Image (tube, rainbow, N blue to C red; front, side):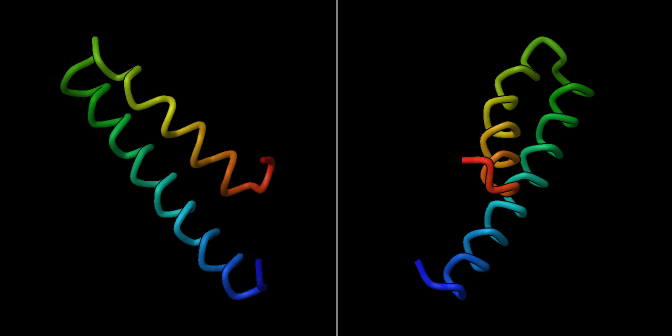
Length: 53
C-alpha cells in the first residue's frame, strides 16, 4: 500500500470513527436500550484509525 493510499484510508477511518461516535451518542440519547449496537463500529473504526490493527 502506498503512502497516498494509507493517508486516504486513514482519513476514511477517522470519518467513520467520528460518525459512529455520533451515532452512538444519538442512540444513547434517544434509544438507550439499543446504543450498544453501534459500539462495535466505534471500536473497529477507532482501532483502524490509530493503526493498531
